[in-house]
Image 1 (spheres, rainbow, N blue to C red):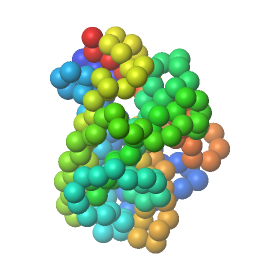
Image 2: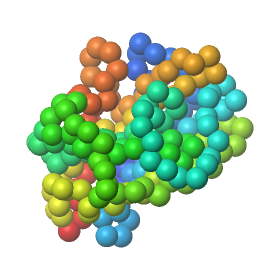
Image 3: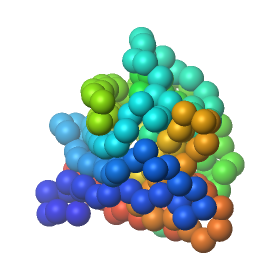
Length: 188
């Protein structure tokens, strides 16, 4: 992470899953004005070998992790409460709040609605999502966040691969605290 709070890194595939269609998957995170968090996923590879839904009108949806989707987990450092955001290349999104490991529910009503943009070519997909962290309880100015940056990619045969900055031992588990590998300060 740089001094100005920007972050850019390559995600790695879980060792028990594979996806030969992917050359690289990178994530860049930065703060925009008024505590808007921007995450940009850049996927390079053979896009025709992946199941990537076409872009449609933005809407909230559930169970996006069953297909190609990009994910962001965040919570105050040293706190068991955290949030999960899913962003689909179709423009769909989901937001969840957890009060403990995997104990939570969808955020409804006051959840921050992300702004999702998608660019696609034969060998590249770029998905950017901007969400307001200011509306999330517990995410206040000047605290440090722990973030998990990850993705689920589905190939043409329907097989899923799991990508993250860091994977805990065992099966893929984006909710595990060891996967929250990035620290980032909330601007004041």
